[in-house]
Length: 406
Image 1: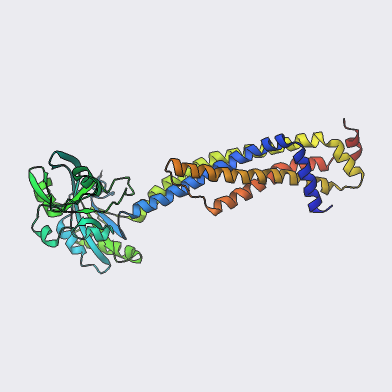
Image 2: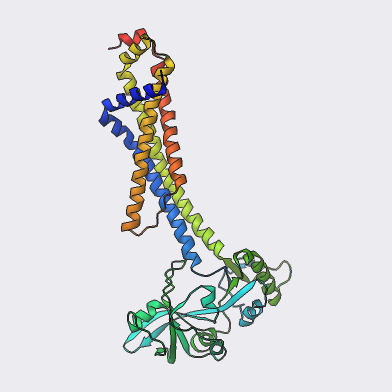
């Protein structure tokens, strides 16, 4: 008997019990749909994390004071030390693989303009920060090297801060605001940037010369971090090695002594957050995979019932010349058809769920072709695996005993 004829007989047999066939497919639909939706959400979240982190800067290395290594039995952690000085940043500017360097000190203060006020983060930095972060301005201009040297009382606002203090679409350039007891002149407003990889709203902050923040706002003698931008993505590793060597030499660290600073790259941040996302995605996909197994068991149960119901039909076919392999193939095809159709409906369901979550909940979702292919192959494998036993049982029936079956 030809494969086409066997397929037609299998389709007719499934069509005779439409409700039972649909209910059998339901397990596969739920399982495959859940897997597709979970994988889509995981892939979308991973892409979103990478995009958010990359908004923080171009080929960026961030140097923090303090080390994650144990020193004298005490663990510090990045950001806990006071070992970074403006002279360190100046020394890094001479490295061949380094394009931009920006000092950074940060504090949180109240900004006042007329009857409006806003508590926000004030970051002290230098003129290279817009280039490092690829961050243009909407209004005005950034401060100059002369402003940094003279510790001028000038400030550049984030877009959210400008909107809060001055209103939507208003250019506050050359306006004066008050920070503590100091009067600062607004030089401009940064373009909207959105959230960073850490979920921080980058538009809810203001920028001033780091010398001004150190001397007049925070009272610090050291800087908290240094941003370094490598000349290209390929130069990040060599730039990191050169920065490490220079910093160790400047801080007088001997061989074997741990660093008193920490260097973090964007890849480190992406890898950490992606690993967390992948772990959650794998967990959820594993739970959804249980539904596929349950769906496969459902297929096997229904096929066993079908073999029992159609015992006389099987006996008749064997008696008039059908081979055992023809019967085996027919029931196996029925199981595969159920699983593949269920898998296809599950893919459509999973895609629909991911799109609904993306549109109405704002969740990132990306259905990859690999996930679809795996889902189709897995559903076919489930059909073969769980359909083989009932099919073999049908093929092994004795024609005479089958014809006697009531």
